[in-house]
Image (cartoon, rainbow over all chains, first blue to last red; front, side):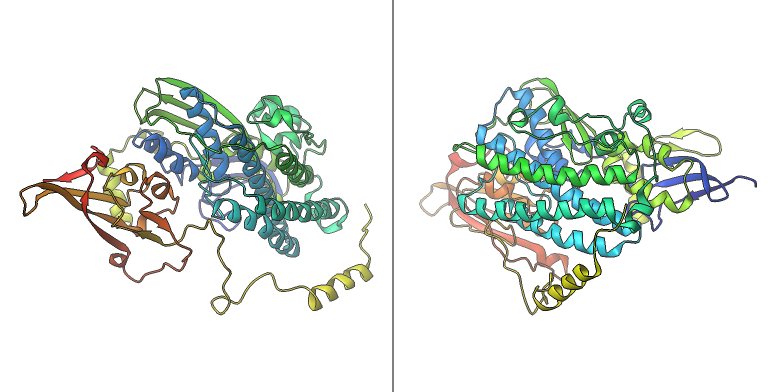
Length: 388
Length: 145
C-alpha cells in the first residue's frame, strides 16, 4: 500500500491549542511525523524587556495558565539571584507548598484529560471533581483559582494562616487517598490498560538524546528531577522519591504522574510541619544590579529554565524562557511513529503539551520557495487590524 | 491484570452517590458559593486617602491605571496639587499588585465577582483626589500643568 501524507491542524479536535502536525501513514500505522508550532506566539520575551521587573512578574505568570506559579517562582529565583537577595525562610517553604499544590492540580487535570482522550469519560469527571478540592485550597491561600499572584520578588504575598492549615491537611489527606485509588485504577482497569499500555513508546535513551524532561523522561526510566539533582528552595530538607517507570509508554507516564500527586501531598505535609515562623516577604530593590542569572525548577510538566539579564535599571535587558513542552516535542514525535493513527491523540497528550507556552519565536517562511521574511511592527499592527 | 472491583462494591458506591453525597455543582445563580477572604473581585478606590503617588500606575502590568496630577492656585494664593485616577477596568487582570503597592490603602478588592458589562465604557472608573502631599508624589507619573 502506498504511503499517505496528511496534515492535521492547526485547528483540530484532538487538542485545544493550535499546532500543525504532518503524518505519513501506511494503512493504519504512522510511519513518520513532523510538527510546526508558532501559531500562538505572544512575544512574551520581548514584552518583558519593555516592562519593569514587577510588571514582568505577572507577564511571566501568563506564559502558562496551568503552571503559572512555576513560572513566577522561576523568574523570581533568577531575579533574586542577580540581586543577591535571600528571601525569608518561611517564604521559601510557602513557595514550596504552592509549587506542590500546583503539581497536584496539574497532574489531576492531565489525568482527567487523558481519560477524555481515551474515551474514559467517567474517569475525567471523577478526577476533575476531586481536583476541586485543591482548587479550593489554592483559592483560599492565594485568592485565585489560577494565576495566583502569590509569588513576588522578595518572598510571597500571603502567609498561610493557622486556621488554613487544618483545612489544607484535610484536603491533602483526601487527595492522597483519591490518588491511590486512581493508581489502582490505572493498574487494574482493563479499559484503561488496553488504551495506554504499549502506546506511545519511547525509550529512555531516545528521551535523553532528544532532551525530554519531566514525567516523560522519568516514565522512560531516567531518574532526573531538578528538585533532587539541583535542589532549590528547601527541597533538600524534605524526603520524597524520584518516581520512575520502566514501561516507557502512556501507562508509565500516567503512573509517574499519579504517584507524584501522592508524593506532592506528602511534601506539602512535611512543609507544613517544618515551616518556621517569621516574615513571608521583604523589601526588594526596584533597580536590580547589573548581572545575569539562570534559574531552573521542576515544574509539573518538566524542567523550566529562565535566563534573566539586568543592566542595572528597573527594566530587564533580556528574559529567556525554556518551557518543558518545547523540550518534549521531539520525543513526542518518536512516540507516534510506529503506532496506530487512533493512538495519536493520547500519545501527544501524554507529554501534557502546552503549545502556547512553547511558542517562543515565529519565522515566516514561504513553503514553496523556502524564503524567510521579516515583518515590521507597523505591518503587524496593520495585519492584526485587518484580521480583527 | 485482573479487575479488582466487584459489582457489589460498584453498586454500593452508586447507591451512596445517589442517596448520601451532595452534587459537586451548585445551581448558579440561585445558589452562590462564597468567595474566600483573599479573593480579588471588583476594585474599590478611595480618593480621600489617595496621595496620587503613582506607585500603582508604575507597577500595573496591564496599564489599567492612569494618575493625572495638576498644580492649581488656591484662593489664598498658595499652590496645591489636585488630580484624579482613571481606571480602565476591562484591562485589569486582578493580580492585586496595585493594592499591594499602595501605601495609603486607597485600593482594595471586594468579593464581588459578577463584573460583566454590556459596554466597554461602563468599565471606566474615575476617582477625584484633592489636595495631596506633594512629597508623596512619584516623579514618573503624568503631571498636567
